Image (cartoon, rainbow over all chains, first blue to last red; front, top):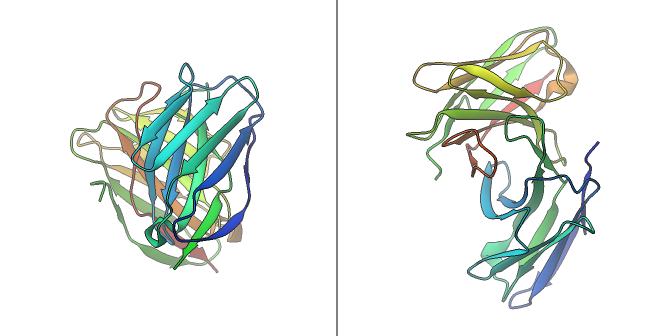
Length: 113
Length: 114
């Protein structure tokens, strides 16, 4: 059974700092790994999708890497801003039909002025 | 804004009742997935509908059922509500059902079961 773990559960940083969020998964049989952002009481916004054959994806200040063999991914956020404050979730798409995503429990990020 | 709309935004029910949640997918999308997110947890896959047929199901009992309509909007029905059904229910649409499809999530329906 695929399990996804995110560390740390919560993180508070001053504005401008570069930071790394971690995600690990137990079964390397994945189609892709995705990072999402969730604001309180809201739905999820897709940030980056890394296909299983890829090693990283970049969008603006965000960079995500994938190491399938070790079951790990990192999300790097450069020059953090207060608007980056949210919960960040990683998810892996697994075989079994229906674009089924298995999510971690998230890292709650607070960027302070 | 993703173009995926869910209704209602909040709902309060009592144990044993039945509930129907609704989702309108983004224009041009034929696939809808439903997820349950308990407080402090990541979302869990309930099922997916593709062109009006169920196309994959997670580890949820049969009292969780769904429908997809010809316009690709969708309903999630939950019978015999239990206290543990209290959660944020998220709907996501995608252009197709193949792997590596980007999902667009709605803002969710917050269900409280008393």
